[in-house]
Image (cartoon, rainbow, N blue to C red):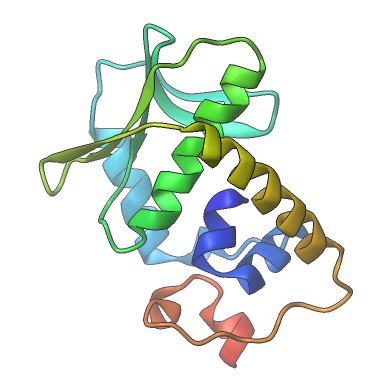
Length: 156
């Protein structure tokens, strides 16, 4: 939900109510294909407490998230920071996260500062506020809306 908070709060609201539109999205399917065909030697998709789904872990020290592109890089960073922060709060000594972009042949290290931890507490409170709304937040048109799996739900 942290990822959706940064991408689109309306999408977050729909997702929190189990309106899942990703199954019909070609772009989401492409992302899944990239995830499935990259880093084949790694044990992937580690579900923790039915809350987070980590793409793969290295020695329980480094969390890797595989992404298709850097278009929503800020949301990806905060998603990874949340995973690191959550696992550290559970006593797992995670050193860092890595955003992997196999199509771009790039990697980006992600670290969590003390301030990030405080920011995550505020972000989680704001997510709870959005989830508790009776109606979805107003549409906030962005450049990525036309490629969003929820586009028809918002605009048609």
